[in-house]
Image (tube, rainbow over all chains, first blue to last red; front, side, top):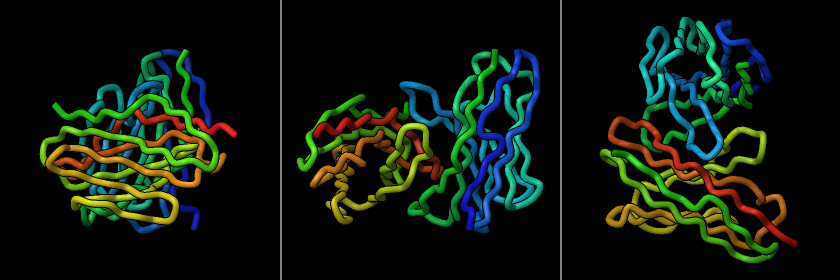
Length: 114
Length: 109
């Protein structure tokens, strides 16, 4: 099992460009999450999904959109990138059926917006 | 508001014991997680506590006091590979994780 995978691993964008980050999991998890991690701050939830076809806003959703068309995939889109979106983006998944369900993380995408 | 506090950085010696503290304030509480994150890598799960007391798992133990809003991670027999950041996260009433900024642990020989 590959677990949680993310593509791409690195990306440099210019302000105003768009891109999509792809997350895939092969553990049949219902719940999937997108976080961003910035120096000196905790992981911040951008959007999440509790099942195929569903999405919900997290703590910092502005400037991002998501889609969960297939259970195993969760896409994060940046329509018009800004330098403030320079960050490391992590995708995570879990069964979400109880409080004890640990989240499994992908390796991260390092995004720089110039 | 919801908040997690943990020290920014700690230093310890190989073979010693270190305790990393975490205090939390959340809207409701459904458990406390500890994750380990090596530089440039993804967080990986270490422990989960929802009841008061100590949970032991090999060299690592985690403690929770719900009445005090307090947890700690205890690492024994420190090894150089334990150099990493340790993330504390509390689960709120909506089953969302509120994350601390992490404690960078530096192990010296």
